[in-house]
Length: 513
Image (cartoon, rainbow, N blue to C red; front, side):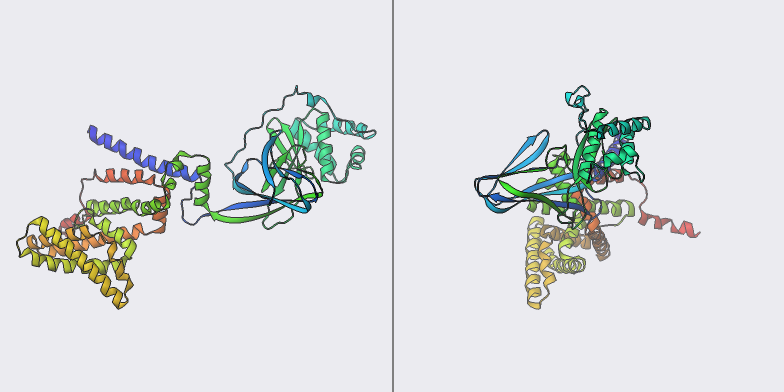
C-alpha cells in the first residue's frame, strides 16, 4: 500500500511539473503553444543630418532605455568614418559620433528594434526628495503674466485634491473652449506644443509639484521623418505619470515609445550647422518562438540557458526526432496495456515509426513488408542448416543488408526514388523481427505471425501519425518539459491491472443472453 501511494504521488508531481513548466515558458517567457505564431517587432531608425564645417565634428544623441510596455531587443549604429562611444549623462544613455575632419552634409544613423511586451517593466524611479534645493528655486514669469499665473493656480488649487487632479485641471484650463481672462493672457505667450509644455512645467514648479518634459514617438507602420512628440510627466502619489499637454489625458498612450526624459537637448552637434534629427519606423512579424529564445537568453533564463537551444544546430536536429520517441512509447503502452493489441517485440513499432518519419507512411509500409517477407523466406532456408542462434542472426543481418542494397539499386534503375529511403530502417531491429516471427511461425503457426505483424504495423502507423503531427513536433521540441508529464502518464499506466478492451469480447455471450 505504501509503495502504491508513493507511485501515485510521483505521478501527480511529474504531471504537475511538466504542465507547470510548460505554462511558465508560455506565459512568462513567451514561448507559443501553437506552431506558426508571430509577433510584432518595431524597427525605429534615427537619422542625424548636419553640414560639417570642414574641421573636427561631433554629434551626440540621447538613446532610449528599457521601459514599461516595450523591450529593446538590439541596437545598431551606422556612421562611415566616425568613431562611436556611449556614456551616461544624468542617468540617460547618450551616443557620441566623432571624426577628426568632415565637410559637407553628414548623415549618421541609429537603429533600435523594439518588441511590445506588456510584462516588461522599467525600474521604479526614486521618489522626489522634497528637500531638494532645485524644487525651492521656483520659476517666475514677467509681469503681468506672473500675476495671471498666480490667480490661475489659486483657482486650480481650489478645484483639485492632489498632484494628479491638479495637473489635469490645469491643462483643462488651457484647452477649454472659453478660457478665462488669466488663461487667455498666458496663452498669448505660447505658439506651439513645446512652449505649452514648458509653461505647464513652470506653473507646476510654482506649486512645488515636480514635473519634467519627456519626448517620445507614436509607433505607426511605414512612417518616415516623424517628429518627436513632447509630453508632460508629473510626480504624483502613484509615481511619475504622463499627461498629454494638448488633451489632458493621463497615462501612457497606446503605441507610444518614450525616448527621453528631462529637458536636456535630444541632440547636440559641434563642428557643424543646419543639424536635424528625424525618425522612421516600420513593423514586421517575426516567429514568436525565435523572439522568445532571444529574449530568454538575454535574460539568462535558466530554463532556456540550460536547454537544447544551447546545443549546436546539428545536435538540435537530432533531438527533434529523439524527443518524439516518448510519444511513440506512450502509444505502444496504451495499445498494449489498455487495448490489448499484440506486437512483435515490445517497442519495435516505435523504431519502425521513427523510420516512417523519413520514408513516409505508405512507402515505409511497402518497404517493411517486402524486407520482412523476403527475410522470412531466407530464414526458413537457414533453419534447415541447424545453425547456432548467434550465427543465424548474423546471417539474417547480412541478408537484410543485401536486400536493402538490392532494393535501393533496383528502385534507382526503375526511377522509384521513394525506395531509396530504405536505409533509414534499423537493420538490427529488422533482423531480430524476422528471427522472432520465424520462431513464432514454427511454434504457433502463421496466424499468430499475421496477428503480431498486423498489430506491429498498426501501432507503428498510429505512432507515425502522432509523431509526424506538426503540433506534437512543436510541443515536444519547444517544451521538452512535457516529458515529465509523459513519464507520469507512463507510471500511471503501469498501475493498470484491469481488463483490456480486446479481452472484453469474451463477455459478449453474456450480453447477448
